[in-house]
Length: 217
Length: 217
DNA sequence: GATTGCAATAATATCTGATATTTTTATTTT
DNA sequence: AAAATAAAAATATCAGATATTATTGCAATC
Image 1: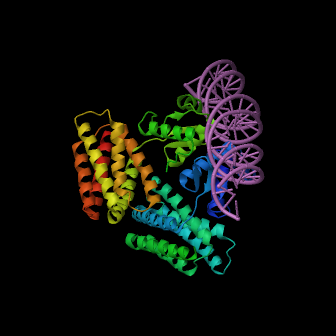
Image 2: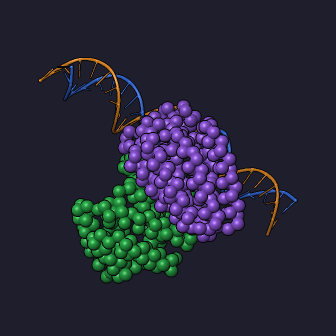
Image 3: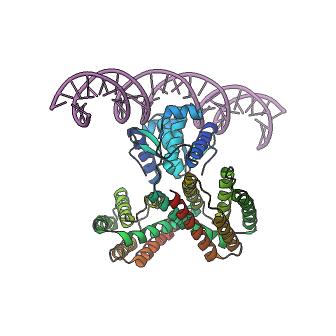
C-alpha cells in the first residue's frame, strides 16, 4: 500500500499516479525526466524512485534505455483488468460478508450513504465532482471487502481498482441509474449476509461497467 | 514483470530479490544503504530505485524516515499468500487448459520432464541444487498457466509465487515424493484437458505444501 | 525522391558528494 | 534506573558530472 514514506517522494508518487488515472498524463506518452522535474518540483532521484514504483505497479512502463512511458491502454488489457477485478473482488466480498462484524456493517452503511448522495448529484448531469465521486465509489467498494481478512488480497485489489478506474475516466461517461441500482443491490445483499447474491451483484456490476466502457472506447 | 531495464539497476534488483527469497537477507532485517552499497556495488540512487520497486512488490517494507527492511514473515501472511495463489493459479490453469494450443502442450511436456529429472535427484537427499529445482518448479507451474491469455494475471501470479517460495526456502525441507506425485497429477490432467481435475490437483498441491510449510515454521 | 550514413544534439542511467532533518546511540544528570 | 541531553549515524533529497545510448537533422548516394 502507499505508505506516507517520505514527504516529497510520497507526494510526487500520489500526484503522478493521480494524473495517470485521470488522464492528465495521456496513455503512451513519454515521461521525460526534465519535464517531470519542472512539473512536480522534485529532483531526478526522487522522480526515478517514484517512476520505478509506478512501473512495478503497472501504471508506467520502463523501456530499456529509453526512459519511462505512461502505460498504454487497450481493449484486451481492459478486459483482463475487469476479469481479474471480478475474480479478486468477488472472492474478497464473500469472505467479508462471512466475517464482517458490527463495525464493518456500520462502516458499510455510512459508505453507501455517502456514495448515494454523490450519485444523486451526478445524475442531475453535474459531472464536475468526478474526483469526489471516484473517492466515494472507492470507499464503498473498499468497505464491502474490508473484512475479508487478507491484507495481501486488499492490496492487490487496490491496484486493480485504480487501473480499472483509469479506463472509466478515459471514456468519461457516467453510467448513471443502472450503476446506482447495482450498488444498492450489492449493499443490501451484503447486509443480508447473502454471499451468493452479493457476489453475483458485484460480478454483474463490473461486467456491465466493462461493456459500457468498451463501447465508448 | 522484471524488465531488463538497465544493466546495473536490473542486476541489483534481481540479486537483492534473490537474496530475500533465499533467505540470505533475513526477514525483518534492516537494509542499510551503506551496507547494500558495498554488498551490491551500486550507488545509492540505484539502490533506492531498486528498493522502491521491491517495496512496491512487497518484498521490502519502507518505513517513514527509517529506511528499508526486509518484509517480515508470519503464519497469517503465509496463509494469505497460499490462498491467493490457489485463487489465481487455479483460475489461470482452467483458462490455460481450455485455450492451450500445441505449442503450449509441447512446452508443458518439456517443463515437466525437466522438473521430474530434478526431483529424482532431490529425492536422493541431494539438496544442493535447490536453486535449480526452484527454477524448474517455477517453469513447470509457469508452463501450466502460460496459455491463460492474461498478462495481468500472469504477472500477479509471478509475484505471489515468489513470495510463497520464500516461505518454502525458509523452512528448507523438501516435501519429496508427495509433491512429485502431485506434479504428475496436474500434468496429466492438464494434458487430458480436464479443467476440474487439473485445478483440483493444483489446489491440493498448494494446500498440502502450505500445511507442510506451516508445520515447519 | 527516398534511403542510407554520419555528425550533432538530447536524454538516460549511474555515480559522487553535499545538506537538512531525523533516528539512534552514548553520555550525563537527576 | 529513568529522564534529559549531546554526539554520531542514517535517511531523504538535491545538484551536478560522466559515459552511454537515442534521436534528430542534414548531407551524400542511389
